[in-house]
Length: 326
Figure 1: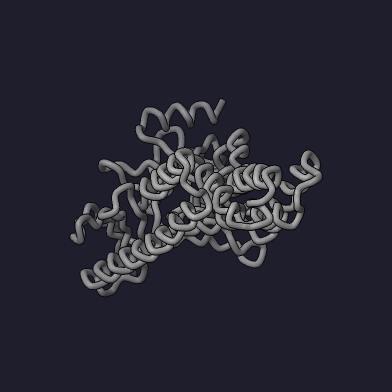
Figure 2 (figure 1 turned 60 degrees about the vertical axis):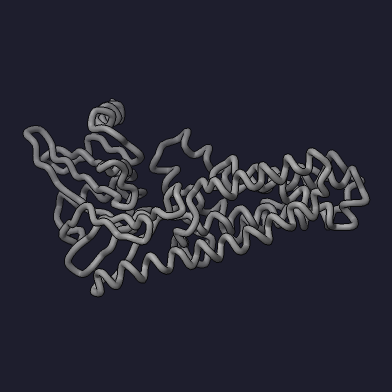
């Protein structure tokens, strides 16, 4: 989920914690728990600092080890220890329990986005992405805002957020069923589909689709229970050629391939260099595919420059490649 949603969820868990008698009867502990749940709801995303290095490092590692099983254990211990240093009178067990719940819930809800996490690391590096909830879901965010306002005007925080989270459980179930219905619909239209990659949009009734068969990739959209097809590409596995193999050694392309499950590739030979381009098909927007990886190589297969990330125009991409060269 986005940062704002994780913040309001941290506040919500702090409010829910007042139902815990140990927390509810101790104002100092309740304040410490609130700090713990807010920080805990953000901690797994501290790896955003990797953007300062480069996009490849960020893409390859974001929602990786910081969302792993060891991290879910370590983050609450670190946060609890830090808070306990300043509030030594706090009940250590209950402070840790609520902080742990905040960290766990952060990782858990991230599984439902199309981006996903490596939530089973280090036992598996496979990305888990259910593609059920958009990275920013207005219903989840604004329902928390309403609950926080009700708390501000005198409603009991514990029962207010308990009610909200019961509603959200049913919301997730409904969205899961909606996703399954879209996939079943896609497979009825293209019965030989081997994969259906699905991404939720900002709107409840709109889903982005990439349907793969053994021969083709179909880029489509499900809107109001109707599937509309946009593009059809021949499905060609990555070839074993000197140019492609040289490009795959590049960090940016390696990061792209570790993250993207469905893409097309193309090679363009120019006078002074070759260009290898990989295009993620999941994020089609207004006829454009913004998430790409580009590698420029000379005719001896030496890498000249490269880039991976979100680009919304060829002019912007050209500038980024020139900057990478410098």
